[in-house]
Length: 199
Image (cartoon, rainbow, N blue to C red):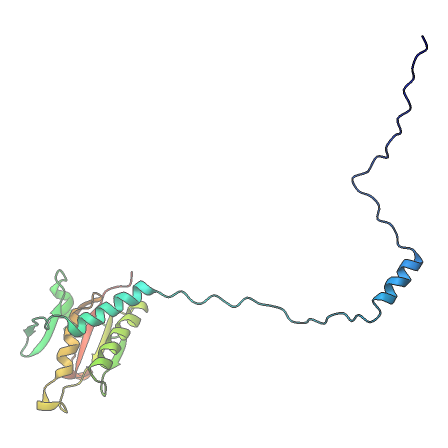
């Protein structure tokens, strides 16, 4: 019985992974140039920069300051100041050695900052005191002086601003002690304040 031979199977061309791109002919290049003869390249000389991110807002810090201001304005009555040497107001925080207040009254602490409240109303003075204390604390100042005046031009010649300032100081956590300034630093018209050290 004759053997059946299967028909020859045509071999398929093997495709390579990367084929060489066809090189356009001279006619194709001429036709392309003619097609884009009226095209002009775009001119763009600007560089886009992302705008900087806005600074972070210390919301909790602002909230704390606002709460302190509200407490200073609408809080309880002024603390009872114990008096030394007549009518000179002096105050120290509980637990602070008495010697620190004594040194403060005798001028042994170097004054590193001064705030003058003359010409300010109640709200302006309160904001000025809070801002001044915060800035002095950030700078590492330990002893500062606040000039509140003697109230000679106030109705009844009462030192209203002086009493307010003493009350505000006693409610600030960074204030360790305060006392009336010496005569050469303003006497009854000013107060010397001892601040806690910066953390």
